Image (cartoon, rainbow, N blue to C red; front, side, top):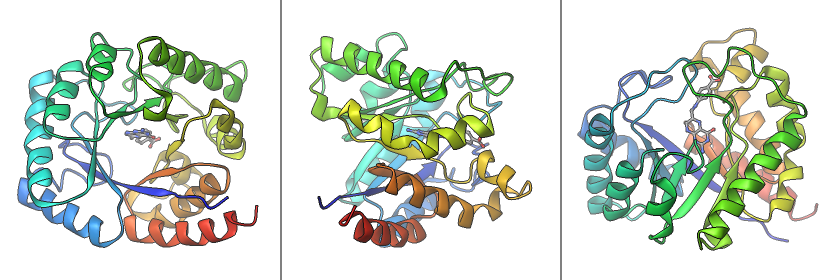
Length: 267
Ligand code: PT1
């Protein structure tokens, strides 16, 4: 079966964003980055106003709205590209949806108050991600009975919550949440067994780009030296059934996906 794999380019607006170091806080710089990602072959631009990397602190609704919504509006004005907003807060979701995003990317899988209601009354797609704990403390001691089964069960339940709220399955995307309350071996087992999640029957998004699992495998390489390792992991994810790849390195990922798509024709 011919497979489509979409590349989601990461645009961070958080001042402490873990790998862009807050380079794109200014709107013009953000728009320049978006233009480049589109040239490089991005299918979706993902905008986040809350850092969710390990250790990150929570942000207020007002700060998140102020960081994210003006950029969404400007991108909508200037470019014809799908936009996703990386948020867990109902108020941010509501503003993002009225500003014209096509995907809500929620690392808390619509478990925050009001999030499900906002999404069900809209027509956006929704990415349901698995996270154990909360960003500030999630890497302290992640424990699973079986990492694949536990995450599978969680995602199946959240799909059911959405179904019961009247959200069509065709609007859902799942994400096992690499690095969100997971040890290196949890992450590696997940990557090896990603194809188990296919039976949930909805497309799968994978975000591995520049994460510490890559750094650890590369003898503690710093964030700016994790691109090749990330690319390798993203090819493995594609071969194992991922259909959206969230990445900092859009051009390289887009090229790698052409190779994966070519090979997937014969699997
Ligand atoms: C992700 C993701 C995301 N990751 C989706 N959204 C982040 N759907 C933000 C580390 O280990 O995978 N899927 N939004 C970024 N979060 C992290 C987590 C960044 C872990 C870094 C690490 O270094």
